[in-house]
Length: 633
Ligand SMILES: [Zn+2]
Image 1 (spheres, protein in one colour):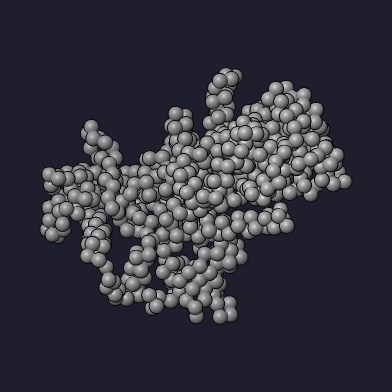
Image 2 (cartoon, rainbow, N blue to C red):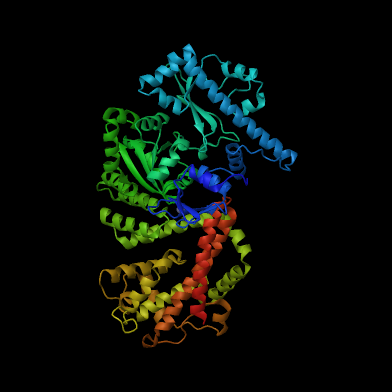
């Protein structure tokens, strides 16, 4: 691929300006106002100093067109008229790629066949084309989406394909013809479904005979080239505008996508009837982090659809909802009000998804306490799917205000849901992870057996460490921190904010969070707060921690990396000791995060995702090393 010049390849997507020996432009992979996307013609590579994406011409095509390596090579070869060298494929892999090639060729041919039927036959014109024209579609739009028509004749496509001598087996694989030799799509208008690179991979057909009892829409069956949950209708036409506007509109119907395009709104895709899958959400997240979902507003439909949205939140996307008024769908509403008012509607009426959901549930709940509890749980479920802790806490705050529920309780419940999620996700990986890091698992086992002897409620080194934090809080929380104006409790609680969600002991975590909201509201936090707590379990723990100093063998710390304060009274707490305990707990948590991340990295196949995670891992390792030096030196 030496013939492919990086500057030429990039120029067909990005405006490049000369900057010394290099070229500079706005990065097509992330949103930016000042260009940091650099192309070096002499090295034949690109690099973005904003998002760190970098590579050669092939990688650029892979990234921007979302193609596999061989696909990208083929695109470049075609563009530069390069004869591809026959690679040393095995017979098997060559047969496989020949078959894929065959499937693609047949799909492309079938798409042209259906289009020909629509435009050039009496039946196609009177039934198919007139249907679209009656609905207000211009010829240009119909052509842009390569709309076609499948005639009534049950063998129309089968016979045409036979004339072309296409393999019957492959045609059946694509589901275009059934095993009896009849066409799958009959008397239907045809919407071809494209891969985001633009090639046809399948079809959807809408029935034209309104008396028929057959399904209104049918889709090609899944095949080697068509995976329903990895396809978004219209993405091949929308992706550049999605990136440019940094927003994607999501609608339900194929004709909604077409209408919006006709009105000049290009950044729109359809999930093809089904609610959005994880794969689809992840595909979108490569183009933008902002998604606006357009719903036609009947309440039952909305509620069902809202459930699917948690999946989008998980991919780190910001979701907004726009409800189409008056029982219209996007298509009919757009035609009613025109494109200018439609855009104004989108700008003014899009609401943040969680806030929208909250409002919807609040109206429903009224004064029913059980319904309220269910509603809160529902919202917390959505919030727990959000990866960004800052966003999460803002939503929790809002939920607390809006539904009049104690914030600390909400935080606690959300953390529980997150942990439950992680547990389910980690269940499969758990065995591997234990095998992967034998030292850790052995350590945990030893800790477990040790603590069983000492304290039946403690089950791991982390929990012992967490318990130490509580001990500090109870005994020294009220003492000024290091001669400053803040208290030790404030210092400790502020400093463990970022590891709270990784706490192993829910009970301890609950106490810490409650203590935090206590001091946040300006109240004092002394030993009596715990010792006279209305929850008897907290009372008992406080008594336990303030009367029985932990004794441990001297090698416990060196062997297991657990640091505890051995002999103390409340006056003797040294600030360096407290700092050390906090840092050490952080060290343990990071160590675990790295192991978790390693499992994730191993299970991911996508090269870019792997790189992203490896970068995160690098950060974690740096933090871990810094903490190590601070704790043990
Ligand atoms: Zn970039």
